[in-house]
Length: 147
Image (cartoon, rainbow, N blue to C red; front, side, top):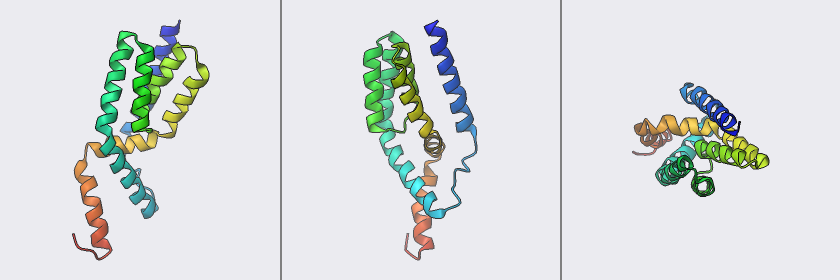
């Protein structure tokens, strides 16, 4: 029964992520200042992504081998580096659910939900690194600065 429920949580998580990540990155807010802030936050997250991904990958290995306690520690370490890492939050929620710690499972799911849009932006921009590099130059040009 627990395995069926954990599979259901993973399936729901995967479907939710697929919907978010395939939506257009019209995540360009109408407010230009907010767009600049989002891009800076995303650029900062991209710089942290490699070390967060190493912890996440290790957590996945441990999860697959059944070492849930150590996997949870790796996912928590990933989230310390990059709190917006929704995949780590979903795995952590699944572990907490299997361990019947429902309040902490829900907490991890809620953390992931809070960061869906942000991670969609990180994912989209990580596939287009030139867009990150061109933004500051565009802003400097618009303000009369030199590139």
